[in-house]
Image (cartoon, rainbow, N blue to C red; front, side):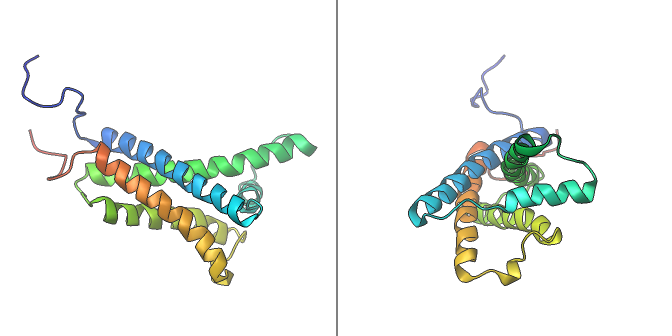
Length: 176
């Protein structure tokens, strides 16, 4: 292998690399979202949200796919599936942004972070609204702040991480 002066650990750009880098960025962003949410719980003494579990219950109802088990075992599965939906949402939004980056969309961390935050807000809240679990139109200012701050942290970390993991400049997909 000849040394072309490039970083030997550099991954060639393309959809798979974009998807993977985006998924990693989304996972990092989801960790930030969770940390801010837990910090809010500690500072304000508030309980965790029931909406993830309620969303699992409604998804189970409308999809006719039961959550297995009875009693406490089933309740524990529902309680575990709710946060897993959040992880899947955060990683999925990051992966979608990574694909966009692989296709040539190259926002900086600020615009990329804003897109990540908005994408995560919509991906998390639209299904809950559509399933009748929550109606953001009825939220108080305090409710909105409790939702926006963690998603802003998600966006900032996801945008910065994705920018750091992927090349900037012209589109990553170049003719050979």
